[in-house]
Amino acid sequence: MNIHPLGLGVIDLEKLGYKIRLLRHKRALTQQEIAYRTGISTPHISSIERGERQPSLEYAIRIAEALGVPVGYFADNAEVSTLPDAESYQGIVDMPGYLQSFITRESAQPYLAMAHRVSRLDETDYNMICAMIEIMAQRKRLKNFTDIEI
Image (cartoon, rainbow, N blue to C red; front, side, top):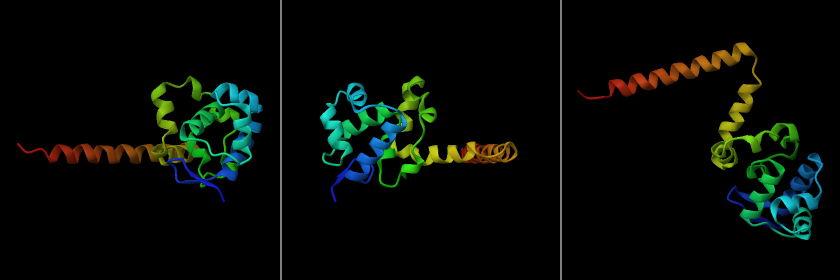
């Protein structure tokens, strides 16, 4: 098995290529379009998709950006079935740079997963979660206030 570390854990090249190809098809993009968007040659894209070549971190990031996903979606623990549809990420290119940067960071994944879970709650549960967060924030502010020595 060919493996390649992308700073996200170890990546199986065949799975990586499969995920890229699957997502490219979901986006109705050709290898030539991905090559144009990334500046990577079409044969190189093809060999990555077949699991024959390992992309550098820079190339993986370029491919992820061209497909509109965080590079973390190429990690082994990201299931293919959880890859987003085009509609899920169509607004990412319109986001401010700091949000794009946050979304693509591996460290942001737990927060994004939690935000996704919260977004699926009904209104009552959502309001309860918001109230709980506000209570915890108030407790923290109060604790910080009482820790001040006079």
